[in-house]
Amino acid sequence: MNKFESPDYYLVDNLLTDDEKMIRSAIREWVDEKVMPIIEDAYQKAEYPHQLRGQMGELGCFGANLPEKYGCAGVSNVAYGLMMQELERGDSGIRSSASVQGALVMYPIFTFGTEEQRQNWLPRLASGEAVGCFGLTEPDFGSNPGGMLTTAVKDGDSYVLNGAKMWITNGTISDVAVVWARLDGRVRGFLVEKGTPGFSAPEMHNKHSLRASITSELILQDVRIPEKNILPESGGLNSPLSCLTQARYGIAWGVIGAAMACYHEALNYAQTRIQFDKPIASFQLVQQKLVYMITEITKMQLLCLQLGRLKDSGEMNSNQVSMAKRNNVAQALEIARMARDILGANGITAEYQSMRHMCNLETVKTYEGTHDIHTLIIGNDITGIPAFK
Image (cartoon, rainbow, N blue to C red):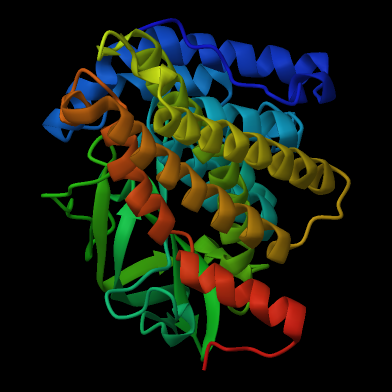
């Protein structure tokens, strides 16, 4: 494999600060040195590479855009996005573990929790000492979280939770789960700790995608948690949806990394693979594919950079995040498919990474809001007419 060179057709690097480029370079080097040598084996074995978690904590990958006072890196949202880009260049499962920890566990504790909860959990989650997961999706309610059946009932100085969650990244290894449940008809957030009686998180197996990531169920059977474990500032469905906005932001950046990896691999292969006495890069149809790839990557880069600047200035809204998530995942998946096509039969082997990215991106297109749901979110925003019902 040739050393990775980041495609930058429009000199987008010139729009980044020195700190942002330095942070990206640090994560890029780590991915090259620590992730790339082991990730294909982990994917083939369907094992999450646990040895990476502490290293990611040391690099500040968990909750990187949250305040330093809680042990977080406190970087800009653009720098955070670049970190997610480099992690997903390694594998979507690696980026998922980081973005779930930061955007779906640390963010709600920071935003909706008490200072005691922040001090207790955020430093440990930031370092990777503790692992967290986010329980919103249910077996019968994915795109419609408003149909949630999981309940919480106040009982003295405790809450008793009952229900089930599905497709939960990190669930089986988590020390704490941010579980969303209906309390007196209103959606609230609760911290459910590992080992609590009635709480279990069996791992889901036999996946064709995100094989280097842990996916779990969460089962809650009369799970009694102390009153202090409610996230007191949470209230209504907008609370978990705001967390999803943070995660979708990271995804929009992350998939650029997967697309870059596939483009880089396909370009190098096309320049060296000889057919009919010349490299296949000399053929018009192959060049058409490569041009499509670099064009879409450039558009993805510009879309995310502006989104990150809007987030840093406090002007970003969730509809803009939906546009970036929707566009970038779809284009990254198409780029991965094109790369696999250029690689021919070799593309289905573990010697090359494009098919691994392609399989992973099939999941990324579905989770954190499907492609179609994001279409309807944007459609509702621009027309004022909701098409969900």
